[in-house]
Image 1 (tube, rainbow, N blue to C red):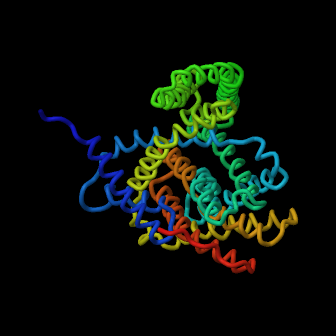
Image 2: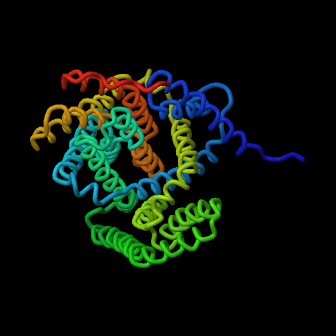
Image 3: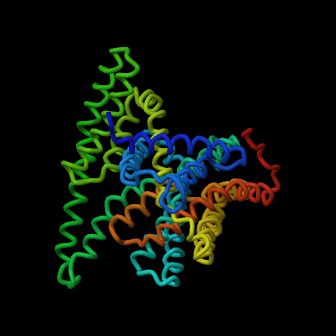
Length: 404
């Protein structure tokens, strides 16, 4: 019987190519993310041969974003953040500000509007959790001073990005809402305030009600002694709360999933929930990166090499310099300062999410979106070399490279 096989073909092409190219990336001592993104480029509309269904890929990517945010919430630790708050909080905020300002300046020189240039800079300001943690784990530095500060720094960046995902659509709608912005300021403020209040009610509801109901529910599911039911229950909670946030409180799916993860993280079975949901989170995260690669027009590397180089310089040089300045101001020693700077000299998943939001809201052009993706790919490829340079400048022997 004839049937539509586009979903199957998209999944097969995405997973198989991501696996093959991810393995190749590891062989060349690169992050597997490079392979996943290139898999999307291969099956995307800008390369010859088979083209995957982009509409299906976009929907699968949305699930990937929800599960990525759920994972961020599951690993959010206020205790870890408080231990390094004196450096991590001001450091992350200053670095976000510096990268946004640099991106805005470069964007204006490229002829972008203020809003598009600022969003480009903001997208370049946040490092990839996946890349950072993997690099620190290779050097056995996660539990050291530099590792704890870098992870705390990343937590602050993630929290700022979660807030941005709530506010950017509101501000974009307000900016495009009328020809007389002065006359509409009251209505804009009312709309933004109403949405922020609604989000606040959702978070309070989740902390007060969800904080009691979800632990009870997880315990009841655990008593069934069924691994598949526990895994299914965790995923149902993540997706169900994401939908609740969107449909009832007017928040984003991503925020709902993040809050669900934070609430579960505080329960006795939070660690089990993180462990059981990890395989599916990883699978859909791969599809998310593949779908991002599908949107990338590689021709930007040939058509706008100067712009690409400027974006890469902001990520690798500008962010590192800002991190070094901040850690030096807080009198950190040279070695941890260089390690923190190197670990933040790349961008990843949140940058893709922000660029996608900008594209969807018509704040960002396809060309600017491609510049951000090009900057991400190149910065991830360069990150191992940045670490080696940091090792050399600190006078410490390079960390042993993992076997591919």
